[in-house]
Amino acid sequence: MSVTKYFVKDASRRLEIDEHLAKELKRAGYSHVELTKSPVGTRVVIYAAKPGMVIGRRGQSIKDLTKLLEQKFNIENRQLSVATIDVPELDPKVIAAQVAMALQRGVHFRRAAYWGIQRVLESGASGVEIVIRGKITTERSRYEKFKAGYLPRVGEPVLKYVKEAVQDIQLKQGLFGIKVRILPPNIDVFDHPVIKAEIPQIAAAISDKPVATETAVASEKATSEPPSIEEKTEDAAPIVIEAKEKQEEVASTQET
Image 1 (cartoon, rainbow, N blue to C red):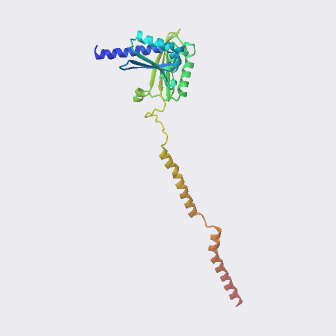
Image 2: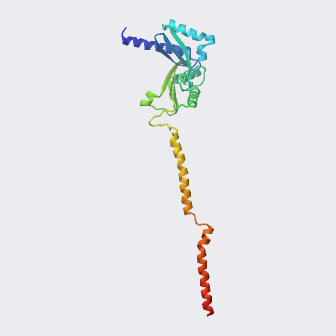
């Protein structure tokens, strides 16, 4: 087998495993799976919002998954483990699956979309967009788009930061498609910069400046304040003595 065929076959098998697990673990909030090959065997890590549902009662569900991976996908010496997603609301695959299940239960598509947007924004995301396609209100297929927050459309941020997932579901009206795009929080984009916290040293230097200005203002006030009453009386004493001497001279000239 050539190198190209080997990598194509490996990628197609990974995709088949991901699609199968997404169908089987839809209610568990399945996100994605990681396959890592080692000399000992193949390590399989399943990421889900509810790992308890993946494991099952007394580990029965995870035992069935290990048998399935061995029989259907020929994964030998597998080491299966389950990991929890830190914030399920920031995973577009989880949100798309939840919106699809809401539509399957008969919830109106607008209510399901706004519910998903509210959950994503409450988790701290910068922006979210949900697109629902299918026979929504009439016999003719169309789509409706629901969005909130900031979400870039083109450029490097879209390829680097924006997370995207698509979920299909079969209803009575026909096949519906749900597409979810999420921009995680604290992403610095050129037209939407993030204000970072101040450095402690700069904050301390800024806090010390008003003290110096206060002392300078106090010194200026001290120089600009008018003299006190005692200083005024001491300065006015010579003037009073000169006035008395002039009155005595005037009185002596009148006597003569």
